[in-house]
Length: 129
Image 1 (cartoon, rainbow, N blue to C red):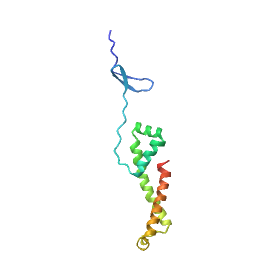
Image 2 (tube, helix red, strand yellow):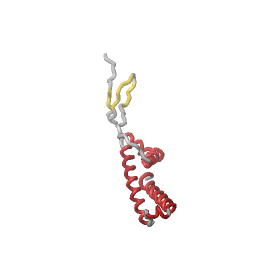
Image 3 (cartoon, one colour):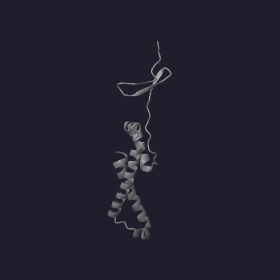
Image 4 (cartoon, rainbow, N blue to C red):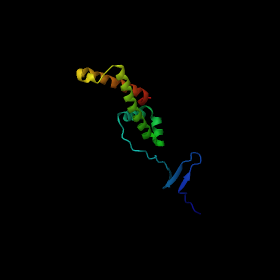
């Protein structure tokens, strides 16, 4: 009589495959490979938000291998949107390049204010949504 256990088995209910290690069956789980990306400010902020406030979504994205793709899309969209919003706000404020030479402090202050407004919009639209 042969009492050897099968080396692998599949759970019919879940579809998960197990392999035998010693006396225990261990699930054959692996996280899919993800593309390597370099995160910028917006990508890091979105990643932090997902880890802290959207743990289920974060875990699902990791398990499905879609986290880096999601972060890359957020970064690209944020960069494009920031430039659009800055251009729109700059046009509304009547800020000209000539003001750089005539009233530099006013120009820098206004541009910093415009950039801060654009980033707040991005945070609400993309990062913390």
